[in-house]
Image 1 (cartoon, rainbow, N blue to C red):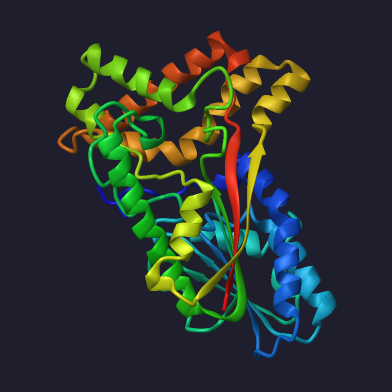
Image 2 (cartoon, rainbow, N blue to C red; image 1 turned 60 degrees about the vertical axis):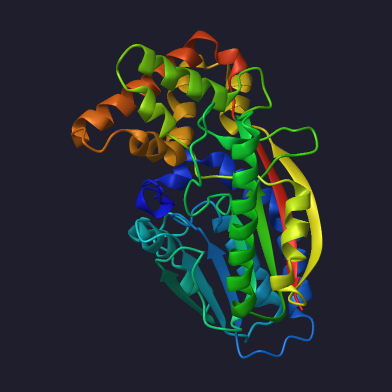
Length: 361
């Protein structure tokens, strides 16, 4: 199963993933420091700024806007080129609408920043995205944990982070290392000397926590239990459960150091810093503040569907009619909503990230 066959962020992605925007906003101070470091003794004809895996561009809008303000303040006459990239299936029309209506009143980035040009690139970050030595400051959030494909079936789960299959975990770990080396090799060509790149990626922290397992209800375990129950009831098959695998890997902090120090990247990067960041689920926060159970049950699952729907859809036998597959996945999420309604006080998807800053040397 190839990731690019099914992974495409849904329309209104940023509206349905408030937590992702919250994480990016929290990373801005580190991004600002990187920006200021790059600008010291800057001698390139323009400043290349890029968001890899940008979806509709909405979640990083605040970070990009503040970065452009900083550039305008420090280097008012320096041309800036901003690139948004994502898979070809991404809704780039939404990116265009966002760029031309950044404040909801029809204002455009290009009106606000006279030295700015913008491009979009419909390719995976596993491929070249920008011309050689044109990237000054790169950014990617909640994207580069996706592998190009799922390397093998996970016998006891649908996500490798929740599996106890040691052989499968080792296979995923090896592929994740190769994936990160490949990603960084691409960026090494694009970045000029002194350029920096901030990777804000899902990971496993020192407590062993990762996305969705910081609270009473373990999100991926609940996914697996409900999907397996549907197989026991004959709605789907056991083989379809086996074929449902998230092609993701949540790295530990040491995984990044190992990749940067890989012989294939020797002399190309300096690992500036690695920090853990745990971010409370904003839908859970709203529920705790308001006590509005119905709104939580309605809105919380939407943020999960934006990135997980197509994984379940792709696990189903392609011989099933398209409408039948969508109906099955809808039933899966309806069951998940029922579980949330029954024990809402125990649900919530907290984000666990690493903030990894690297420098091109």
